[in-house]
Image (tube, rainbow, N blue to C red):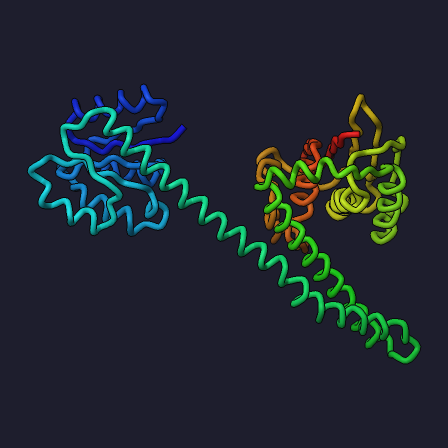
Length: 362
């Protein structure tokens, strides 16, 4: 439902317009003068504004000028409501950026037609802007792999060669080379995650690609993929004793590559955000036509508010914990699960337990 702000100092006209709009399934909010209208526009961000030209406190010209100077309200379409005697002044309003005008008195159909026209034009403009952003994101996604990964692969390759020649290096130099190699690996993973997230966000807005993804016929045995990843991550964290796995095997409708990515991000977080000598448990079983996978840790956890804000480039209490990363992992896992027709949820009690549940179609 579109929200329309009516700024009109004459109560009868204001109420008549509100009634017309509400009968036509618009949400109407009203202000009796320009000052209140300007504040409502900044607070509510309506989809369109109907504004009288001559008003006390702040006239329509001043309202429009201040709206266009504020980036948060600059693009809201505005239609002036004018009396015939004000026609000679209308050009000034159009030069300031008004989108249209209606001369009082006007018929309900004239009002609704003007509103519909403006909203349609705004929708087209928004769609074009979004398409430009999508094109830019796509261009970045195609250019970054080469521009970043080519020099990065040189760093990884050469540092690995030096590590293999450890007998020719002093302990201090070997530690520096290993540090360089680990930093390059971290940067490589960040690059991969950034590119994957950009591609997934483009995919979300393309229903045809989503249908094709779900119908591509890819299927994977869950048990071996999840177990192998979990064991590897636990070993890298020197926490093999903390890991327990209870998974019954099943086939899910997702490629092994994408299932691996989901499992990697979720399990890695479970170890990253919990302390050594606390358990990380992985449980998986079939239920009707779905497979339910649970990853449970007893670490820091999240509040309900934090769970609602989980997203890309979002990290909680970063300064307190000095953690590394971009916050992309959970977002990528969630997107992948949902794009394949599954469900992703988080339950957490801070400082006690976090359960991430993934439901995938079989």
